[in-house]
Length: 298
Image (cartoon, rainbow, N blue to C red; front, side):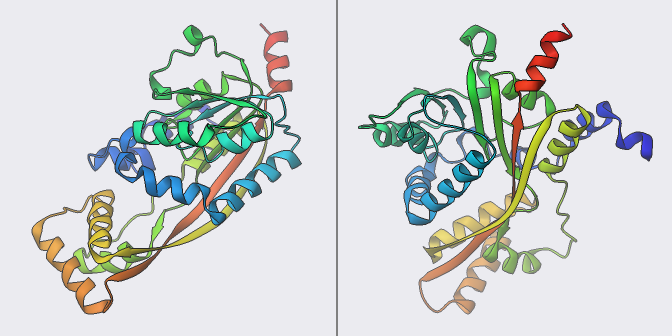
C-alpha cells in the first residue's frame, strides 16, 4: 500500500481509467462535454455577471493576488473562458488575455462582454483546447498565467501537462472536490432506483497527489459553494431527466412519469427553487522555480 501511494505511474493510470470522474460520467451518459452549455449559454452568462457571480470572481482573484499573482500587463491564457466571467475582469485589470472557448453561443456572448474594455485586451480563440497544437500556436511557456476553471479539457495527468506547458509563472486549475449536488435530483433519486449510488473519486485528489509526487510547488484551497435558482416545473423536469443520465439511470417513460408525479404532488406552484453546489478545489501552481530546475537539468 505504501509503495502504491508513491507510485506516479499507478496514479496517472488510475486517473485516466476512472470512469466516475465528471468528464467520463458525462461521456458515458452520451453528453459531449465540449458542447454541454450550448443551450444554456444565456443563463450561464447571466449567472457569471450577476452580483453573486461577480463576488465569486472577485474572491478568487483576491486569493490569487494574495499568492503573488499580478494581473496588470500580464499575459493570461484563459482556457474554457465561457462568456468571459474571468477574462473580462482580467482585462479590466490591465491583462492581455487569450480566451479559449469552443461553445459558439458562449463565444458570441464573450465578444459582446469584452467590447469597450480599454485597460487590457482579449483575443478570442473559438476552439477546443484539446484540439490545439501548443507548439504550432507558439504557446509553449508563452503566458505568465494559465487559468482553467471547471473546464472539461482537464481529464487526466496528460491533459494537465499540456496546460502546464503553456505557463511561465503560474497555473491556476479549479476542479470538483467531491460530488456535485442538485437538491431536486437528490430528492427524486430514491424514487427511481434502489441502488447504492457511489460518489466516485475526486479529480482534485488525483491532481493534488500527482503534483505532490512530481515535486511541484503549489497552494490549494477547497471551498463549498451553493447557489439557488428558481425554475419552472418543465425546466425542473428537464434538469432531473438530464441528471438521471449522470447516474447511468434511463431517462425512460417510467422514470419520467415518476418525476412528473413527484413534482405535481410536492410543489403546488409552477416555480421551484433548486439548490446546486458542492465542494470545489482551487490550485495555484508556481512554475518559476520548476521551469528553472527543468532548464538546468536539460
